[in-house]
Structures are given as C-alpha cells and as structure tokens.
Image 1 (tube, rainbow, N blue to C red):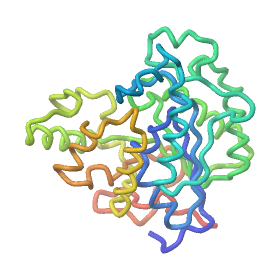
Image 2 (tube, rainbow, N blue to C red; image 1 turned 90 degrees about the vertical axis):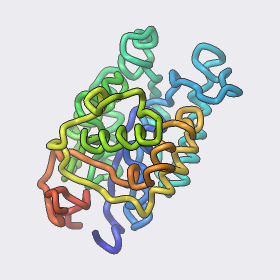
Image 3 (cartoon, helix red, strand yellow; image 1 turned 120 degrees about the horizontal axis):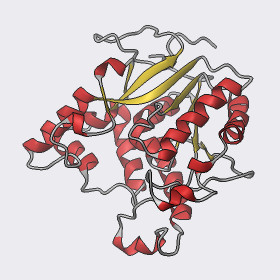
Image 4 (cartoon, helix red, strand yellow; image 1 turned 90 degrees about the horizontal axis):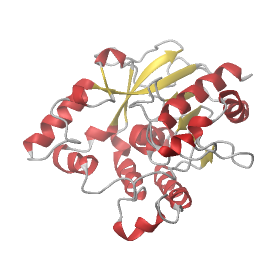
Length: 288
C-alpha cells in the first residue's frame, strides 16, 4: 500500500442506497482517508425496499411511496461516515430511474424502473460521469448482479457498457465477490452462538456465494471497519442492528466485514500479492 493515494480515482456503480456500504464500505473509507478520489453512482433510490423500522412503515411503496426520498438522506449520512464526498444518482438532473423491486414482481413492469431502462441511454448517462471523473478503477457487480436482483444485473450491464463507450479507458475493472469459504466461516460462527446466517445451512445455499477461484483481490480495510459499521447503521430502514451483519461483528470480530473481495475483469494483477496470490491494492500497477 502507498502512504498516499492523492491523484488516484475510483468509481463505484451500485443499484440502491446501502449496496455500496455492504459491499465496499471499508474499501471506500480506506481509499478516501488515504487521499484517493472516490465517486459513487447509485442507479436508483431504493423505492421498493423493505422498511425495517415499524414507525417508518408509512414510507413504503405500498403506503405513501416516499421511501426513496428517505433513503437519499440515509445514503448521505452513510457517505459522511465513510468520508466520501462525491456521491450521485445515475442521470441526476436529466433522468432518474426507479427501483425495480425483486425479479418477477409487479414493479418490474413499470416503464420508469431501472430494469426497463434502455441500456445505451442509461450507459450514456454514466459515460458522462466516467469522462468527467476519469477513474483508474471501476467497481461494480458481476453479470448475475451478485444474487440476481434485476437492478444489480442492470447496474452491471450499464457499468460495463459505459466503460466500453467512454472516451476514457479505465485501466482496471473489478466485480464484487463473496467467496464461499468466507461465507461458510460466517455461517459456522453464527451457529456457534445459536443463531443463523439468513437461514442458510451451508454457504452454497446462498445465491451470492462464489467459488474462491473468483477472488483476485482482497482489500484489508479492518482499520476502517468501524466507519463501515457506522455507515451500515445510517441505512437504518434497510439494515437491522440485530441482524446477521451486526451479530457477526459483535460475536466473531469486526474483521468479518473489514475484508472485501474482488474479481479482476480488466487489467493485470499486480504486486503486492498476499500469501494466497491476491492483490492487496486495487490501484496496484497503475501509475499517474
């Protein structure tokens, strides 16, 4: 790792507010603290999300349909915790896309949802950001969107298409990955305290578990994991403080969430590598 990342730039493309913190919160906080420019583009405002706080149930899409506006505030609070000052919604000031809900649900059919967006039109909106920011690293989901959510899949498609169309050639592109071995450790730890990890008996039961061979980089963000946990708490309508995230951190150690894993899909794997042959710095091999 360098002592300073002044001049280095990373762009993250996520589907809904809270996705960025769960997947990349420690990475974002670490690079921001070390001087890198961190830009987050969120593709929807998460209007179809479940509301976990009973007194805010009226915000739901089935009630006043004002959850999206509330989650804008949650995202701003989370980014403050992570030290990220450049966070935007895709198409802000031009065209905003609505949360599509889970696959096969009624919201999927609305013409204004992200799942129904014209791919090139949405990609062109992201191209504007890429050409402005000129990121050295792009982070988004894999082609399955991590676990099959339509907005995650669409965010992947839009990010990859925009990277192709942009005048700026992004040196390195990574997809988020959750290795099956790490998830199994979490399941075993939860069983050890008499709880469960989203009801899974084994890691393979969870759609986002990927074979360890997909891991090319491991960012050790444990020095910043407290910031990540505080950012999670900021997304209070979506992440329960008594849920698996916090149960794991409280009972097995915060390092469960401080380590964040990536698949390199563009660019060359570069030293320094750890004992497993993983990159330890997403900017490795990039020169200013």
